[in-house]
Length: 245
Ligand SMILES: Nc1ncnc2c1ncn2[C@@H]1O[C@H](COP(=O)(O)OP(=O)(O)OP(=O)(O)O)[C@@H](O)[C@H]1O
Image 1: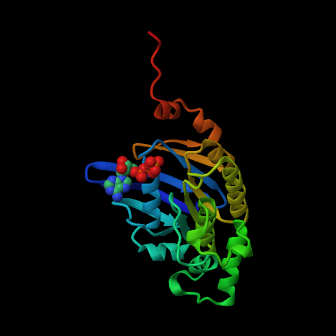
Image 2: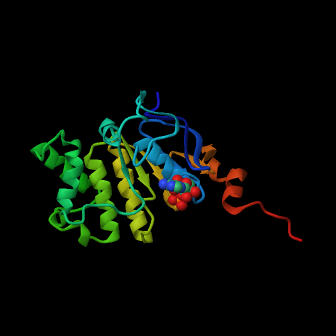
Image 3: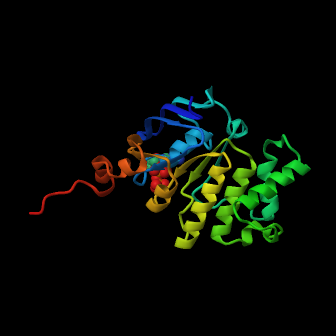
């Protein structure tokens, strides 16, 4: 049984079918890449899985075999799914440590106890935020540091499955290199990852398996090398080649 199973999931906005019957299984321990042209439904698919801000119109989403598509978002998070967003999101008026503690105490099940503080510190360490940064306000951090903090806050929830929405967007090349190492470290710690990304080097360095969406549907799926060489995928990104006149 796969950790995450999405079956025939669909979401429409009026007449626009943003996600149109997607079926996808993510094996535990895998880094699953998702790519596709702009507007192909990638972020909407994450929304359907997490219930933030909506679930699917149709279809099922199962975590470890348990249907979660009708659960409220906080219960989906408590079941073991955390996510990050395209834009850096943090509580800017809280410190770095307090932000991670929000993740570690998520849902009010764990107060800011010693284990929760330890989980917060460990998660910050995992993304390379040193103790010297802990008292800084999140709003004062650089873009890269804020992305790292968003990642740490998600990791502090100790998810089974982590959904990363374009973690490389807005980063410099050295920061992208550093992010690859951080995500490899998170995967090596036992967290299964689904990664949406446009930066191809990033996607190819990290993904064990790749799915391409187009028009809300799965266009291709398989090993990253075979998928990016697939003529259907080349056409979806570049358009059909016309013979020279
Ligand atoms: N809340 C919404 N209301 C109306 N339309 C929406 C909403 N969210 C997404 N869409 C539309 O659904 C389609 C899929 O959007 P989505 O953001 O999932 O694509 P994407 O593949 O993540 O794109 P990108 O790579 O540009 O981030 C787009 O046409 C988008 O405009």
